[in-house]
Length: 305
Image (cartoon, rainbow, N blue to C red; front, side, top):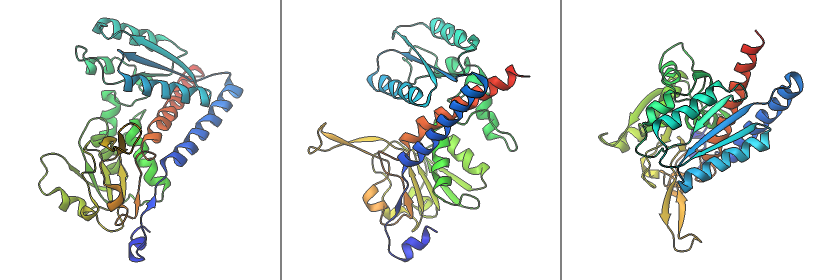
């Protein structure tokens, strides 16, 4: 499908993350309406923000705004940057016990004096809508097992491919980056869908050679425009997770946002590609809403047994 575009000398089709995310959001909104009508139940998401990091505060506001638009109850908790480990874990414990809260999202990064792993592990498995509880990740890694929740950004990457008609089964896929948040989980998701997966990282020899053999490239390395068009296989599908600031004196803020892929050169070779911004970003929040809805469905099932 996408290789044909290269045979005909066509530029890559754009994978519109905004449009796909909006479809996901509308599905969630309709399901929330039905849940309220049929069961008198409203899904609830609690956000926990520790400190005053501007970017984190912006992300939390965006998530809460989306909740409001979709009819999901949103409860925000803001703690000072000098909060102790015990104070944060106590808040998480109270949210675990609250029957009106279906999902708990602790905004990362946390202040350096806090044990991030311990706090994330303290979130109830059935409220882990970020999908990073060790049991959820363990199930994701195992053949024949499924997690209760899939990490939101990797989940969004897979949905973008599927909604765009990109064949995953039997494909050669290269994931550039091995973070716990994106690289490793998305590699496991691709493998579960029968792709042959290669994970590349900072110690990989001849990165370009690996990428050149890939039908699907997931770029999540955090380096601006590192992957260029001459590194891609003609017709490849490219999902660019990166969000980087690049100096641009013509831009109002003095910079513009770019991905880990050089979009202009890549679109001349790829069969399909996500833009930055407007690709993966909108999907992350949409998948969080989908996970929150699923958490509410799980809670209802337990309540009605």
